[in-house]
Amino acid sequence: MNKAELRRYVRAQKKEQGTDRLAAMSREICERVLASAWWQEASTLLLYYPLSDEVDVRPLIRDAFGQGRRVLLPVCKGDELELRLYEGETSLAEGSFGIMEPQGSLFLPGSYGEIELAVIPGMAFDRAGHRLGRGKGYYDRFLSALKKACPNAKAVGICLPCQIVDSVPTDTFDVILDGVCF
Image (spheres, rainbow, N blue to C red):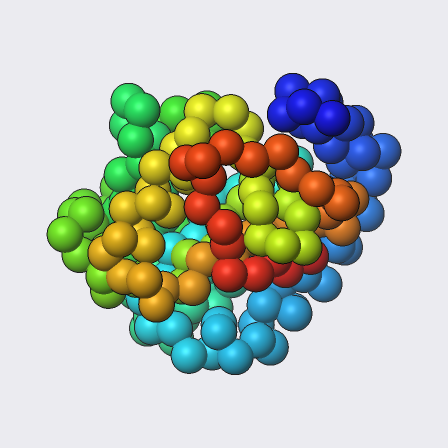
């Protein structure tokens, strides 16, 4: 399958799961993340505020924030992701694509070397760490900058089991993730 076909296929698979099943799977996936060594060791984390068809990582955001860790969330600005400090639920406002976005302090690209863990959503993943996004390239550009700033930062994809495929079509600019949690 090419990228467009794979996106259509995964969207259909996610719709078949139903809202209750998606919520249950999200809880199970978050429990696995919370138990992982890479989660427990990170003090500066990049997460994301979920769309309705993505793994709901709000429990991870609350856990990290509640433990006093530095939590960053992305904001779409033009063709780039801008990272902002999460300062609690009341600091969020609806932004691009209907996604809740933090209004906190800007986290400049020069500080990317401080990020220890980036939890990355996507449309499809394979077990080798290849990721297919929604097609705008936001995370591809960010991951490239992150890996240049901090080669040891962990970038982990997170998805529903129905989003794991045998092979994701890739391009030369795609960054291979360090793992995928599903």
